[in-house]
Structures are given as C-alpha cells and as structure tokens.
Length: 165
Length: 304
Figure 1 (cartoon, chains in turn purple, cyan):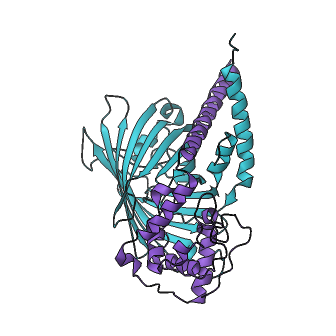
Figure 2: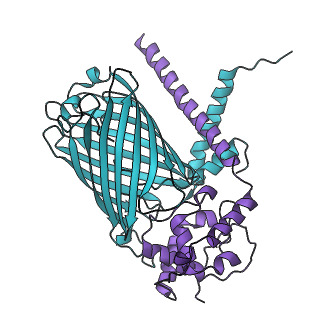
Figure 3: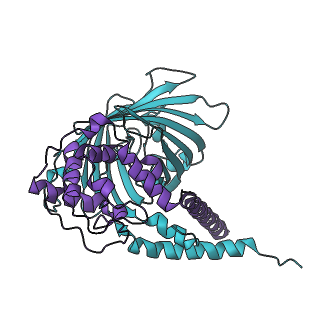
C-alpha cells in the first residue's frame, strides 16, 4: 500500500516538474520570438551609442595605448562579450558587430558609457558589475581592433587578435 | 470527424523529448565566465545575462540548540529571459542529523530591473512564490519573528505544516569604486488570510580583491576573488512589529569566479543574538550555461 502511495507521489512530482519545464520552455519561446526584428534592433543599439551624454563621451581612457591593457581587455572580452558579439567582435545574431564604423569611431568615453549602462531594452545587459578599470581595459581592447569587414555578422571561431593603432 | 488527441500522452512524450534534449544541451551549451557576487542571502541589482542559464547548488550547515544540527541544501535554476527580467526556480531539502532527509519545497522567483540605465542607487523588484513546509531550513531569508527554536522540532512534526507564501523584496544596489553595497527590504505574506505580513532585511557590501584584470588567464588571480560581508534578520510583523523575538546574522562571504565558468561561494554566518543559530556555514557551487535559451527555442521549433 505504501509503495502505491509512494509511486503516485513520485508520478505527481514528476508531472509537476514536467509542467514547470513545459511552461518555462513556452515562456522562453515567446520571450525570444517577441523581440523586434534583428536589423532594427541592431540599428537601435548603434543609435544608443550615439546617445551617450557629452560629459561621458569626453572621458579619457586611463589605459590608452597600454599593450597590457589590450591583452587584459581581450581576455575580459572573451569571457564576457564574445558570446554575443562574436569571438572576433564581428557580431552575431544576438549582438552587433563592434568592428563597424559607429563603434570604431566612437570616443573611449562613449564606449565606456555603453558598457556601463548597457542597452537594456535591446538585450545588452549593464556591465557595471565589472570594476571601472576592467571596463576601461575592454574599451582599450575594442579600440585596438582593426575593422576588416564592416558588415561582418559571421560567428568566428578564432578569438580576435588585438593590435594597437 | 474530429480526431481525439490524448493530452496526457502527448505531454508525456513532449516532456521526455524536452528532458532528453535538455540534458544533451547542457553539454553543447557554450561556456562563459561569470562575474558573480559573493552574496548568498542578499541580492544586488544585476540580473542573469539574457539567454543564460545558471545552475547553482548551495548548502547550509546550521547549529541547533535544543535539537539536532542540520544541513539544508537547495538547487537554483536561474535564467535570464531578457536584460531586465530574470526568472528562477528553487528546489530545497534538508538533512537533520539523527533524524531524516526530506524534500522541503520549491520556490519560483522573478526579478525585474526597474530602470533602463545605471544610477548611483539602482532598484530591482523581486517577487517570489514559495511552496514549502515548516521543515525548510535553508534560511535564504530571515523575516518576521523567525527564531532558532522554530527549527528544533523533528522533521516528522515540521513537515506537516505547509506554507504558501508570497515574498517581495526591493533590491537597492550601488557600485562605486569597485565596492558594491546592496540593501534589500523584505515583505512576506503567508497566503492564509489570518497570517500577518512579515518584514525582514538583508544588507551586503563586497569588493573584488583587484580592480584591474591581469593580461594572462589565471585561476588564482586576485581579480577572480570577491570578498564581502552580509547581514540579515527579521523585523517583526504587522501584529507585533519590532526587534523582539527576531534573529539576526552577520556573515563574511567570498566568491571565487573561475575562468572555467564555475563559481564557488563560501560564507560563515554568526548569530547576533540568543534567538539566532550560533553558526550557519554555507557554501555554493554554480555554473553558467550561455546560449541555453536559444537551444530551448530551437527545441520548440522557433527561430532564435
């Protein structure tokens, strides 16, 4: 008798777990497919970069030209950014290309600002949880990249090789 | 003629497929290093990255006067739905020494970022539904008049009492010069109308051991460690407000964020008054799976 109850309980428990997985799955599908078309979203992300306040845009990068900072920034990029922006920063379905003119010609302060504040409604999280020097190291790395293809959207297998201007 | 579909069998098959493929996806999901805070009880305003799943296991050893010591444990599945919404499911259990090991319930939690940009103080909203029994000893939050003696009865007695609670927190958090300070006021309501609203708090402060990353990949670099302290406790309820018959804890915490996607957390909590457990030793292990959401969407035939 006890065994029958235990089996029923286990079955009920499994059913509940299954329901949770199902509901979460459907929720995820809806959440993901309900987003704006990719190209519009990407343009809006670049526009957000242009929206950095003047004061923020004028901030100087304390690590400008520091090869150690480029290497450290490359490491941080690989850990935190490459998943969305691609290993070579050329962009993926989820993150814009950082080799585009809008990014490469942005001031270090504007890049730092966007990294700090994210573009929350367009899917880019805030990265202020990284200490300020680490965010500047990422900016230093980004500005060391040479844009090869302006509209590159392919996911790259090799990490970007940083080089200084 | 309308074909009859047997929903339970379809659901069963669907569940089977989901569970099977989900387990495979765990292996294929790309890996990403996280920068997790060391807090175990307090929350800062940072949410899970969109599309990432974080699986966490935590354990709390608690000393118990007037009863048996215990080891409570829970698993969290935390998913970043968007950059402003994180959802989470907890499953909890406990072992009371010289007694038994039991499942104590589940929790379903959502956190919402309230402001688009970063400010000096950043608010986030936390809403949780708890379906637990009174044997739940994870002490993930302390509220109302929770005191050590509540946990002393044997599991057979405690598990008979079921709690369905709604818990809300406002997560205020500020990051400045590497320091994070987080303050969480807590309000809990047992869904039984006769039960009062209960109040609690959690406060935390933490800082990485180094603010600058080293150029080389390393496991034991100071930048991978975040140390801090958290304090949490109850603030009474609407029937009996105040600090009498409440418990409070102070806990140094440390997190080790490994570049290989694992995070290890340690905390030793000390009770600050006679109503508190003398010692709460906690540890946690978490792993982040990025790109999980995309694979689930593919599973349901959607285009990520």
